Image (cartoon, rainbow, N blue to C red; front, side, top):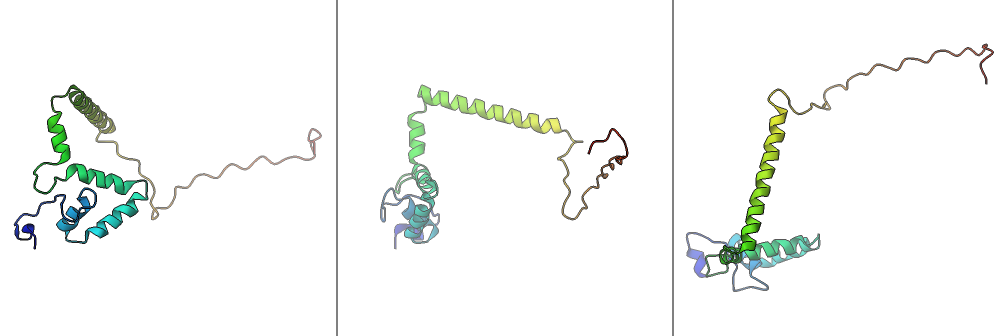
Length: 149
């Protein structure tokens, strides 16, 4: 048995034992209680669909702390570059973009107002609205000398 079997709080960590690349699948398998090879197979199949499995694995590698550490790679990276001008500029632009998105969202929802609502569409239970039939065309007079056949 490992030392984590009797721990009252289970923590999701990348493991060192059973590690093939970065320990994401083995750590997740230990946390969930399934074989890490199942997780690896699912990630490999997801990798065939536009690289989704690879993206998930990389995100896990960045966000999950290594066994024996309290901080993830991403947390360490952010802390080391906290005072970097590039990081500060990126953070400011992200905050400005978020503020613009919130403004456009509130503007879009306030324009609708309480009286207006989303358009109502007929359901399969409601009969379709009836439209008047087109007026019949005037009858032709074939005895008219101006008529050409």
